[in-house]
Length: 563
Image (cartoon, rainbow, N blue to C red; front, side, top):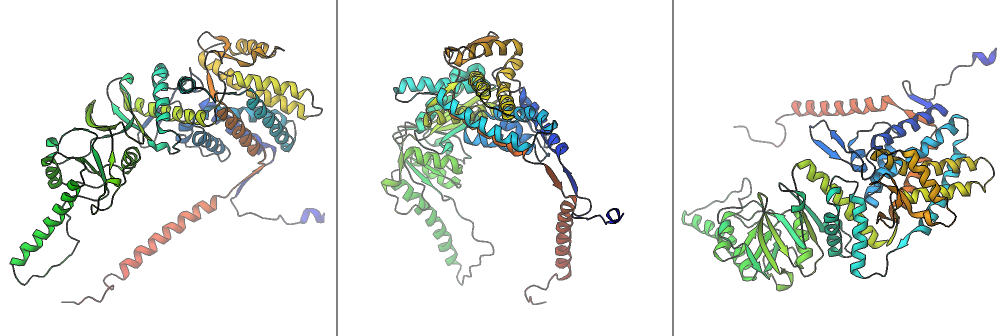
């Protein structure tokens, strides 16, 4: 009786939402599976695109897993983990973002029946970690190095990696054209780590094949004043002066006051102003530069002055473009025109202004340090060009990764099937429950070839059975067999040049396993609705208090004389 009379212990604030135990874990798994289902259909060369329309009215058409995950406004706390792994895959490797979300979703889906049957999540996590380590070792074992090849061979190998990435994108129809362009751009910047040294400029109009690569820097013609058209638009081996100052008459500071006792002094002040600007312009001309670029405005007086002396100038050049010109031409951005020596001037073989579509571009080519490249993209619709830019970003990242970690594996689901076979074999040697868990991990890896078939409209069961049979051959000759998207059968992915850098697969398996283990280890979610409303009230009261204070004490600031 006394036990029944004990008061209930209230630990958390009233209104706190707590859910725990098995039901909570299953609900988290269901949420993650739902997120994976959203991007499921975008996988592979025959993947569909998603049209995402946000509250501001802007429309994005994309097939890139990371872009879709960012634009989906996911509020479920556990499902947000999938968004994070897609972002990390994108920033680390550039491609494989859909793969990583799909794998994580599938690992959880395979774990769900075990959880429902009462298996402790920690047992699953332990087995998944073991399986993940075995899978990574197998990937490294199967990877083929492309080191030690000549530049031409390496170029064609890198182009094949880029083509594999681009085949699943909107510009897949022109993948050879863009793949070679991407490889040239990445080789042009060498071992430079900053990705922004490859600029991508978008010009609507024309078709995809009108896109071109500039071995140097290209940027859109900036805002210009009268006199601009009289400037020469083409130079051979010009010296280039880069500035971060404005070359125009400065307006005086606000409330500036000059007291004059004699009207004739006024003219000397006006003359001084003109002398300052002319002095700056003279120094620019004396430096011997033929092209003057500035991040700030170059006014109409300066534009006309340079035009009279056959010098090209452009003001309001964006910071990013100016830095790229500096890196390419070997110049240094100056914050003063005093003492401009030859060492700070850049140079290039050819500078010209060229019409691209209805835009005019300033193009610097044949740069000495050659650490930059610019891709000018053409296309019909704005959304199309945006998606083409995202696709090229993925391809550029992949080629950079392949250059640094020069090992590749077979794509098209081949590597996944091979790891799956290896794990199933290994599972048989283990006694106890973990045999089942490693088996389920192996089954989850088959989601990649299965989804490739589903997205292309083939019979997934039929193709997977053929693949299993090929990979089970004792001789090991079937290890590189994957889905053949063109015929609906199976083919040797390596022979068909469907390659991807090993680092993509390693990162994807790592991130997906980590995410799955993280979600499996959560058994309680505590949500405090009061804290959110309390924050809102605090902000509102602070604003209100400030407003009232301002109204009460108006006019009591400085001791101003009352007239």
